[in-house]
Image (cartoon, rainbow, N blue to C red; front, side, top):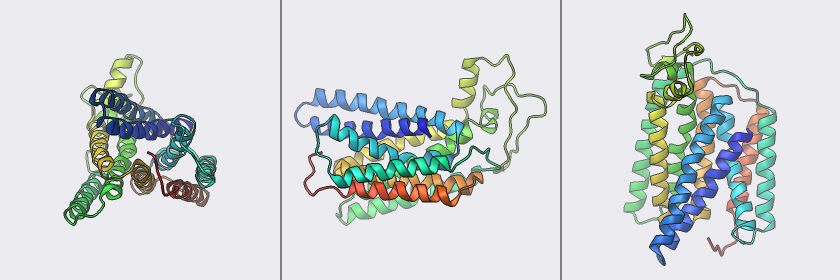
Length: 297
């Protein structure tokens, strides 16, 4: 939970800096590009922080922590960027952090009972098609497309923790061309709905070999591609609307998709207290989003 908090905080702050860099390009292309490049490195680095978190905990809980990044962004805006943060925003930050604590304390680490990988890919395809069509229709009707595009970027990003979970599992490592040498008896189901497979690594598996097993399997390639695609879509959203409207839309989707996916595709348990924690996080995100009319970001 703590690692996920750090990862999502880095992600949202870096996204805001990407928006700043895009704005600076109008006055100085070089300075704006430098800011944008460093911010993009930050968004990329956050993916690897979240990979570590999701390898330790449940997909649903790691996904729910996405709202904590927006709380960190509000504090960053106040103390680093010098923006005025009112009582409503600070209440939203408090509610988000309270929800994160409640969701975290009421959760327990559990290994998924099954990985419905074929269903994950089919759902991803349906979400990608529906999101693309919705954004296209909104654009053709000349309606404000920033929030919708941000939601779409968040929906794509919401699938990242699920595929990260698979890529770090025994099943994912077994699908790598440099897969770990498993203990005798380890195996996998080649069908679409998979049980957990892959035995523990043997001592001869070095660090580079283990890293190759995690990052060279098809599920790792999927989440890396989704990270890039989500970031590209988000850049289009930034060009259509303000960051304070786009990032909460992005955050709402990137919370809901992993929470639902963890339960649906991994059979993770989700208690009423965890549900209350996620509801608090979403409520806090709404409070932070309902900012004053005049925005300076």
